[in-house]
Length: 196
Image 1 (cartoon, rainbow, N blue to C red):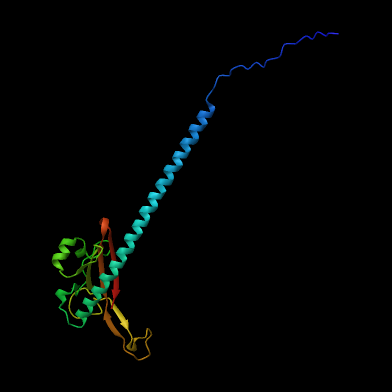
Image 2 (image 1 turned 180 degrees about the vertical axis):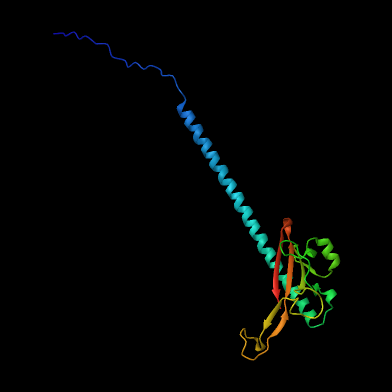
């Protein structure tokens, strides 16, 4: 017996071609722009960190140079106090110097004028920084130390901070040491110390 088979036509899936809208492309472009912005932000923060580190190194270097200037000024001050160095050659003023609004002596405002008026009152380090220093006694006028016109430090005999009853304190004039440091990249620093 032969059987006749009838074949049914096979159902072919019919896909309609959808128009491509490019959604994947738009999302990829947005992600790419976000990554580019993140990379720029990271690059900028690295630049800022580099600038901060550079500024801190300049500040530390200026501070080291300031220490050298203060030590040199104190040596000159000891020479004036012990009368082994003349006042004119020692970066010293026996009266308070005129200051600007920040309390910095105006003599230090212009380095060329200062170098002419106070030769030998600066030192240049091996890294190229220059420390200029000046000392001024905290008195209204030159001459004898007077309670009414000078800022005085009270020292007790024997070097202790407290006075024993019946002891006579010694009054010492105070001295202001101002140091200006000119460093690389136009960095400038001022430091003041008060001593007696």
